[in-house]
Amino acid sequence: MPANPRTKRNPKDHTGNQKAILAEQHAEALAKRKDEIAMHQAQQKAGLDEPIALDEKGRTLQNVSEEAVAEGPVDIPPESVNIRIACDLEKVTIGQGTEFDFKEGQVYTVPLHVAQHLDRLGYVWQWL
Image 1 (cartoon, rainbow, N blue to C red):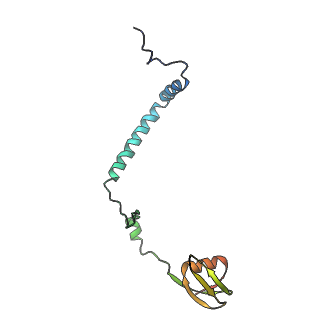
Image 2: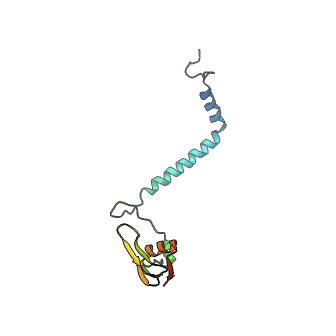
């Protein structure tokens, strides 16, 4: 009985022939990889039962591990700080719709981000 022409490889089909050769050469690695993929999919399915915390805007909240909680309290930087300015600054815009006027040597209580910005530019003489 003649071989089915559809099951016989065409010698002109270089891509199909290369695919068959490479599949034979890498059969062991492919079988191992299938097991890894199956384990990964099983882990993903197990993770579907764990709830994901969302805030009021629909953003995912970060889960804190028990180890991080056991480390102790987290130091939160102050919202405002005291600084002494090194030179006169007039109508300094930092952020949208905020203008600041500073006199040299005067102590100011400003938000932390304003103090950090002025410090990066070299205008802070002293942090108090």
